[in-house]
Length: 261
Ligand SMILES: [Zn+2]
Image (cartoon, rainbow, N blue to C red):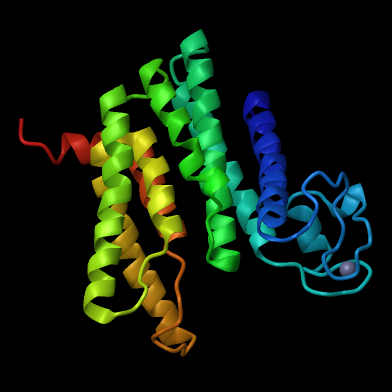
């Protein structure tokens, strides 16, 4: 196997492990800069050999070594998701070699993707998306677009952020107006603003389309199969992230096959 590929995979698995910790500590009251990770049930410090991404979870049979309580499947899921996305990002950005501009481009997309992954975890776990990893990063998208690190212009980045937030706000407003119930959370609007600032207005439309269709299909199937109440809340963030990532990696197909030249 290519040594570079191996290094990128291992690094991104470990990065995924770190994102798990950041996401978890952000939505719980745990001290953020506590150095060592400990079991959330029995508080025993987790040894390094029990903290290897994915592998430890399998070897420990999904349980804490000491108290035998179950470790959430979100841990290996986020680690594998990070490995796939960051490796794909690495090879997409550096497809034509290592230039100064592509290094900056990789760096800002790396932050963007990390924020999306944290949002997936916090939304799946607690139905929240922290502002620090969504709307607060919109300026990074705007600046990156302005400096030429993204494939979109500053104006496209700005419009992307505004319509990303605006469309979901409008949908939420109409939904509440007609049903008197909360449909979308502000977290969904804020993550859409971030997505829009990085992939622009067309990216926003396609993200919302893919997010809604997969959310409807997968969320609906889940409610049916798990025999849940229809009023059960389904996190929308992960589906929006899915849409954004699909557009990011395959935008050529959406653009080339969609627009009549
Ligand atoms: Zn434990």
